[in-house]
Length: 195
Image (cartoon, rainbow, N blue to C red; front, side, top):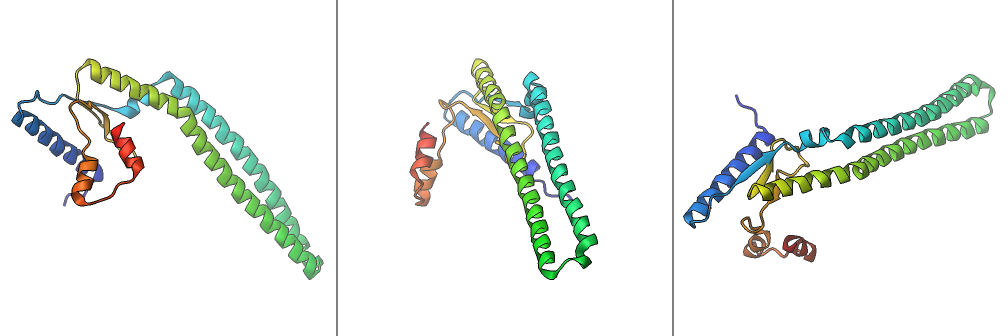
């Protein structure tokens, strides 16, 4: 029994669409579409800046881990002291210490989330210029080679399959289809498709 694969299905869909484009071009006596492909991740992983960025991010991960470890040790130490002294404390003092421990635990969780979010944003900030360089190089090579489309060979769920489209030969029909369906698209979609 074959297992359903979203990645394989996306590849089949892209192939069917491309065959449809090619057939339409031939029917209209247009030159056939020229299609290229690239492995975006191979390009990015081999950029000289990538190693430097990865080292910088690793240093930030280790720094964050040291901060969290210190906070964890502080919490664990206070928890152990409380557990050994608990029977000697008044009920009011026990509640105060438990609230203090709960506050430390919450602070630890918040710091962990803050560090993780900061690391994600830092990775985006550091890699954005590399993605822009690769995208510009793809556009340059596609134009020089007379390509109409450039596709990604390896695509994940959040990664685009289409990396380049020659706007003189490939038309975005999103607004036309929306009108045909009676769908009112917002101004942001219209301005994005017009650019």
